[in-house]
Image 1 (cartoon, rainbow, N blue to C red):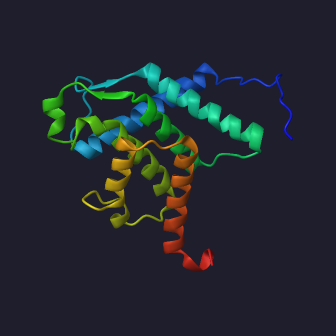
Image 2: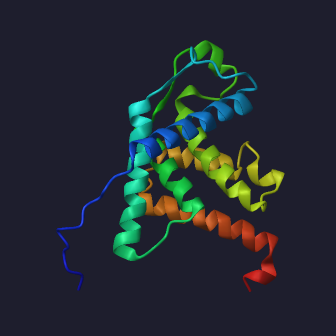
Image 3: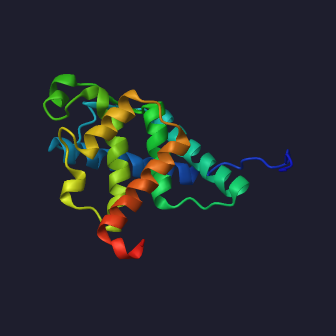
Length: 182
């Protein structure tokens, strides 16, 4: 039985670390907009809620500390991306301001946070160099479309999000290196 330790408290992240993570997420978002829309990022077209984005960073860090403290687990970069994606879906820090400009380049303005969350997960998983172009295709019946639908209309728990990202990574690993996993 686990004893309740009332003296343990979350210490929080240093402000400089939060600020750096905030800048990194903003840069990733700008890159995402430029790649998905094919246009330079323009602050007149988007609203980035820095308070909500800072909360994404802090809540993801709290969950990492929770797993470390209570389960002795170190969260890898894939699960870290999943934590950030989860909180982006919940807190929705990105909003389209100029719909006419953006509708031409994004399928649905309402799916901006979902599309960025998927991009965040894919970009982290792409570091494994195991993805093929077909793994990332967008269109009817693709994995991307199913994720987009699930993120938009389904309720996904934080633990399910972690398992989802880990299973995608293992699925691609097994397809790429079947002998490694038996």
